[in-house]
Length: 306
Image 1 (cartoon, rainbow, N blue to C red):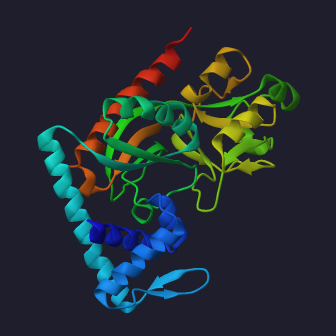
Image 2: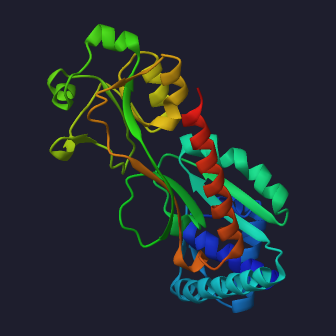
């Protein structure tokens, strides 16, 4: 088993580019991760990495070994999943990612209950509004909220979510309420955008009588954290484009009010994405089923509260 563990460390070092990141990912110290790689090199009788002070890059032998090693680990994982499925006792580790907002509100809060049901499954959650490279990061399941494009990953749709434009009453009193989508641009309204390197949301897509239309809105500041944008809207700093369930409490108590209700943003889809090879893994199916049911219940309760 130690040899297989050494292979697993080697694969993560190749994928993440350095020992520290691979060690953190596998809950090992850099020293232990380094020793695992050295043991593997000693066993194979070749050097697997070119080492610099900042990064490890695989040698030609390392690249060749990586391709075979990755397939070995995938085959072992599939075999273990098949046995777990037959025994009814799923075990192992699931790496999960989600955006900050829904991750904190819907996903993270459900993981302890999932763990109580399935004590042999470990869940490692990474929350980020940035786009995560699922293959490079070794992610098993990614919960997404947005206008999802065609993907090479398998998708389990959870629900369609209404979006609204909203602003604080004092902002609308100070700047005036836009009467048409064009007014967002013509009147230079402060539109609060979720942006980060590689982000795709540089415009808002609104439902108009002519169909869905893109509007190149802008504002004096933006953020890569969705909750920060909501806080700015609450502080009267501009108009926000949000899934209704995220800001429903603020709409209900009057701290925010809907803007342009007749031309709302197009809905977004809440979904779980996972690599095709993970479809047969029982622990992945269990987590996706559990979270799908939980998200539907929690969002429904939020929107139906009086």
